[in-house]
Every structure is written in C-alpha cells, then in structure tokens.
Amino acid sequence: MGAALLLMAAGCNKSNTVNTSSPDVFPNTIGDSWQYLVIDTTIQGNQYGGSTHFNVDVLIVDTVRWPNGITAAIWQFTYPGSIDSNFVYQTGDTLRFMDRTNSYIVRQYILPFVTGSSWPYIPGINNVTVVGLASRNNVFPGAWEIYGNAGMPDAIFTIDQWFKNNIGFVRLYLNPFGELIFTKHIQDWSLVSYELK
Image 1 (tube, rainbow, N blue to C red):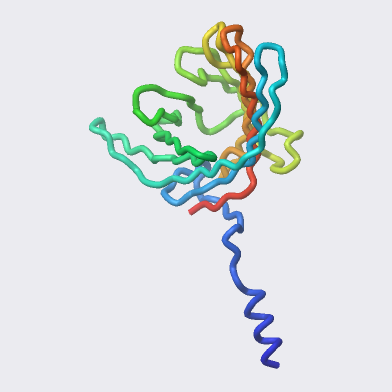
Image 2 (cartoon, rainbow, N blue to C red):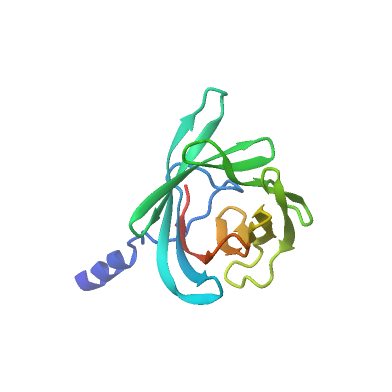
C-alpha cells in the first residue's frame, strides 16, 4: 500500500519542461521562456564550411519604461558562450524588436497576422508577407508563415518564419545571399520547449 502511494505521488510531480501556452496572442511577459535548437550552416564564398548544432535559450527577464511612456520587455538570448538582448514593445498594431542599445529596430511585425498582409521587416527596407496558416510545419500546425527578404541590396537575406498564436515563434529560417556577405550563416531555429506565464 505504501509503495503504491509512493508511486502515485511520484507520478504527480510536475515537470519543469511542460509546454504552457500564454493567454496573450503574442507572449511578452516577464518569465516567458523558449528554447530553440539552432542549425547554423556556414558558407564561405561558394565553399561549404560545415554545420553546428546548439541550443539558444530566450527568456524575458525584465521591463524598462522609456521617457516617451513606452514599456518594453527585455528579451535575453543565451547562446553558447555569449548573451545578447532585445527590447520588445508594441505600439498600436506594430510589434518591434529593438537592438540592445535601443538605437535601431532589428525586426517588426503587424498584429494580428492576416493572410496577405505585408510590412517592412526592417523599417524602410523590403517587405515580408503573411503567406497564411502553414501546412508544411507539421510540428505546430496552424502556425502563421511569414516570408520575405530584408537587408540592403548587396547584403540581403531571406526570412521564413512561423508564429503560433499564444506560443510565439516556432521556427525561424534566415538565409543571407547578398553579394557583400562573404561568410554566410544560414540559420534554422526550431522550437524545442517553452513555458509562458
């Protein structure tokens, strides 16, 4: 009898890796976290330089209030051997990711996602388009596919991203192909786990 109770109690332990969805369409709350498996393929000129696999942990660590009244969440990206961060905030229907110095927008999105909607990924530079609810992303069916190009004419890259409402970005694919980029890092990010508040 005691052994049965012990087994039942052990079976009731909550796992720390349980994926929990957010009540918000775009999760952006302190404590939200995602882990991605990244495959980084290097091409130097026309030569294949190999691929590496590593995890990137993304955690919303805090918020900051700017003098203009905007409150931005601080997203911390933990790579093997380094940490980077972005400020993420929404004004109206536009969600923006700013670099850690708060000096330029690294990417932006128009919410809610609607098939056919289009906007500049980086202000003033090329557009991305919501292709629709992706059917080829079999891990997260019903994720919105966002596709396009960004960057300068000679330093451009393809963006192919999938966003699942109430979860966040479930896949990101970045492929630089501009002539000025000699060492290209083709990155494919796939969501492994997440925990949202």
